[in-house]
Length: 424
Image (cartoon, rainbow, N blue to C red; front, side):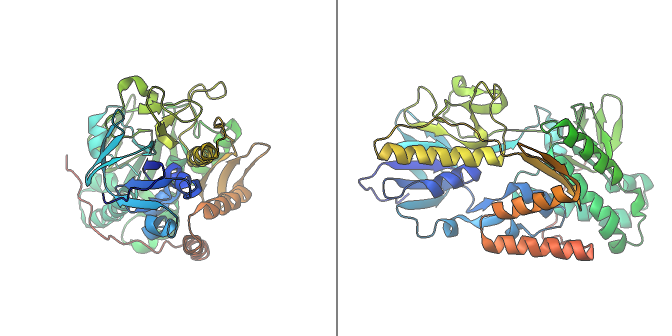
């Protein structure tokens, strides 16, 4: 890998998601050599991927080059590579460009879509965990309407114009809200020859309410907003299979060429971690210091890490806020160790959760109060703007939002590359 050997402990970090990014920002480069490995050369702001998928933002609004983020950071090295396996016994990491030794290893590889073993859904559904998948979904949505315009098969036209979203968490309802905005303001102008009123948006949720991780008040208002926008909400319903044309549930079938999967995620990490360290959701069990017990100087942070505590018996939620706090805390602990101080246990500071259903509609659960409607929407926008990595990204996103709000338009309805679907 051509990394210089110096007289400082070497920390190898795998992954530049929210946890890995925050760790690398906060670690003191005077006391450690840091080597960051990622198979992509950019950091992705995942909470806004749905807007890329629904033509609201271009991908460069939600990604930022890793090398630019850490430009000038002392004793920091980035290598573009895929990590294939971990050899904890010999303190080595094997990658697509060779191996590297470490003194401390940080696994921050995040999560991937969890299809719960349903191979047909995995084959035909549209996940949305990275920019590539978001762009694929954007292309597919536009292609659907182009095909619907040209087909004389009325049943196929219905399937092309119907959308099924599995999962009513924040991602699911945000995607649904964006599709509703397209239906209401954009698509009738783009496709005057189509009766866009026949477009259907369905959310299927296995739980008894939407936004099950938020308060009941937020769930009730979110469901009200969804239905107000013409979105059909099917609760206490599980999708059993999908063949690319029909989604089958216990008591109802949904004909659709597009099934968007927002129903679950699972930890994702390289080979080399034994099964005894893996717990529910394919996450790595770590102690209160994010260290994997019985492994020498191996840590896990972010979505891939499972910390069991009295307050969170099922582990912390797989959220960006948790990942950032874990990355920051672990860097702080390493900085303390370099000064001869003791490490501090990780305790998650829940600052609240929020979700938007589109223009003027959002629900926000904060520690001391709850808010919804247009005020919640402004809070949601402000928080997401401030969390973006760079000032340029904030300005671009803000200008896109302002233009869309004033003109009822989404300006990126282009097919950069055609998405090829598997046919049934």
